[in-house]
Length: 148
Image 1 (tube, rainbow, N blue to C red):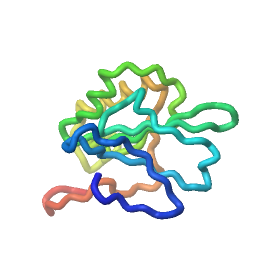
Image 2: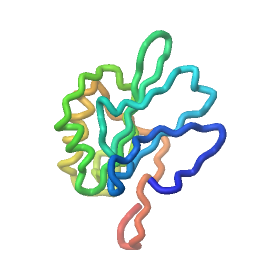
Image 3: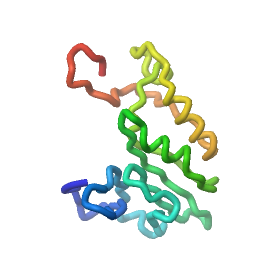
Image 4: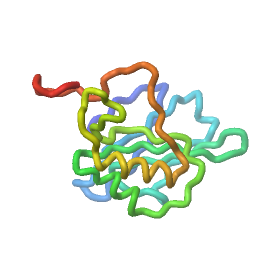
């Protein structure tokens, strides 16, 4: 990440690059009003430029937030699939998975094999798919012949 926007009401969590070509591709913003929940970046579990995992305390429980960026070749999903992590209290996975699929985009006619990989990972973390009640575009094409 280069020149990430900062605001005094938000704190950022991202890993430090181990090499100059290994800059993180994900960041998590937490509002400072929530800092009493003791947020912590876990590079000990996932130390990968496309994944950020943070924990926090809530009512004496430790919960996790996972943020993922996976480009079209799906390196983050492959990393998550191949990396053993015994975490049973992930609250949510957010991010950009770059998976176009007819399950969540009725304008897209095809089924993606990467959808199955995402579902396998979610199942292993005891998570399910949340479908928004307000449909908004999550992809904006720079080609007029492709749909958003």
